[in-house]
Image 1 (cartoon, rainbow, N blue to C red):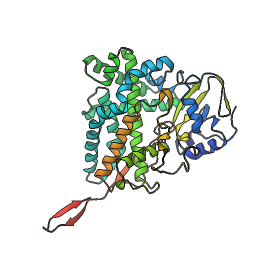
Image 2 (cartoon, one colour):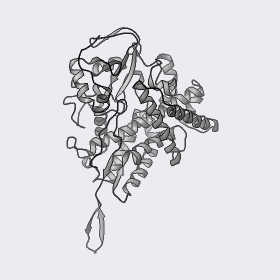
Image 3 (cartoon, one colour):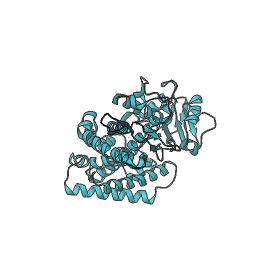
Length: 404
């Protein structure tokens, strides 16, 4: 059935999974893990085989955790139905359209929130709640036609999102869907239906007007966009800052241009993808990387494991933004379910990180800031930072100027 070796526990996979993933991968890139109740794929080549073959490894299964919370959507369907649900949302998330549609808005939102952080008298801040989460939620709110300038709406959207994430994460670990998750999904659906009834413009309205989706289907897909848009971007910002501001290879952010920030973001995606795993289900008996997998078995693709496969990334645990092949990381998956909003998430993360480093060049992590954790979604639970007061120097006229 597969490799016989000590398999990791859920706690080990949720804490620091990387040594355990490396140990599994060294013996077999596909192995049965009892704690998951399925086969864990840790090798990059095997991961690509799964992600690019929806005929053999499907998401269209009643056990699929996200589908149980938000309903049928592009995330939980394959084949023609998957294309019908996904196609109405594709065009706005192409790279050129992302820049044109969101570039100015993202920059303004990031600058406003970074300025609020910089104005903190104590020169300390917690960046998940002050920057990463609210920025991601504001962009999602704007894309779905909600008022992104209304902070109460942004915070409400964040509240719904956190309950839905908790419910999906629990379902992935074998627990029941939570009542707050179900209630949050219903509240989100109600808000989106009200937006559609008002006849306002948005990506959601465009998808409905395209005619291939009814309102319920469009709302389920909008929930996926909210869920992925906030979760992925919040985690990307936090994980990138955790590597950039921490002692991880001596990379000096203040000396790098925007392209350098982009490379650092890509390398942080490689080392700690926001979504550590994605689930598939075998549609037939199949042999994957030498391991026999029976029909119906759960196949868990570890994007975190694939991204540290030394066959592709030498010295895989080292933070090295100069890697020439860093874009071959699989943080956004691959195949027909590759992340729809990956270019928007990259834009938000790069803009947020660059804005922070530009405004607060002496920024550093505070002692005790935790590392990324999580079984399915990985990020620091909080990211505490501090910075020095501006230095002062005297000028010829006897006046004092504050300089960073």
